[in-house]
Length: 157
Length: 270
Picture 1 (cartoon, each protein chain N blue to C red):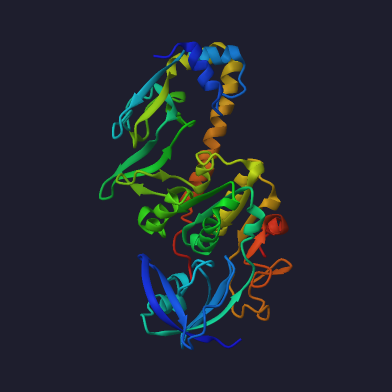
Picture 2 (picture 1 turned 90 degrees about the vertical axis):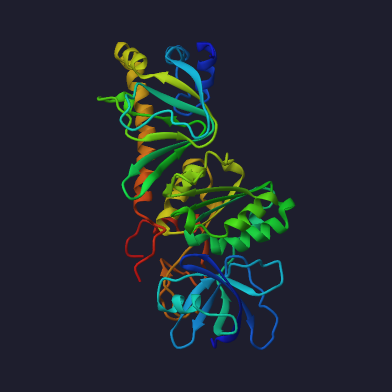
């Protein structure tokens, strides 16, 4: 397990946390640890308690959904530098998708309750983190909307 | 103006609704020279004529290649053509991908769906002289894994030095690649905005998003080139079907510099 000090250096290089005050990076790092997953393993399943989120350092995680008659479908894939998991931010704190490592993954995992408590104690940190997560959500929402347009489908003639 | 008869000499089914046809002049004349990104008007006799980008290698010999998606009567008839049958060909028409502008820089090709076909000659042309470029990157997005074009060839191109990244809009669990919009590949490809010359082709919505994502990362609008798609009947600026703002897509396009036309992208009546 990496020392918190090493984790704050790691997260300082990642877009979501880049530019944060050093003291805040240390606070966030205090809720984090290193982890890893074998290819094919599921770090989380739909409906599980979402008590953490991940920052991928290497590898890729697929967000999946099972649908009757269609089987397991990949909704999105996330790779190095990307955050996996927002459900830890909002009650009832449950994962909405399955997460599958499509290749060996090395990641940082953060304790959601730990970070929420620090945000409640310091609203400046909370607001800053909320802005950064909202930006990430907006980017993903916009690309998802374009995906839903099915722009590569057959045009009407 | 008069279509030249070309004989179908080979066909290859790329996806469920897309074929690549190899054509040779029925007269025995040599293959017409063309620039990457140019198109021909292909005529299925008695059915109709449609603009189709040339998808073959401009630096190699061999049949004139077009990759055609069956979406209407004329394109369906062209896709159904068998070796030995004759199609009419007019062209080549239009502008080309400005590969020379990317020399000494990173050539970033962004393709969506059938949009990879007009970019294939640019990729092949660049790979034939890869030493001229700092890096050649292909970012390709498609609807689903079974609807991706040229996948066997992309593996060969990767072996030849092409930095290939592929994504799809949706997939089953047997797909080990990316799922997401083509712009989600930008970070993985580690684009260098100030070194980038980008060439984009695909559905117009995808082009708008991809161009904006390039701009957001600091790529200059003058370094982004796109291929426009418009209805076209004559390809000779006479019918007016392909007018886009002050330009004719058949003459100034299909390949245009983004900074020359970006102000028209948000206009609904253009």
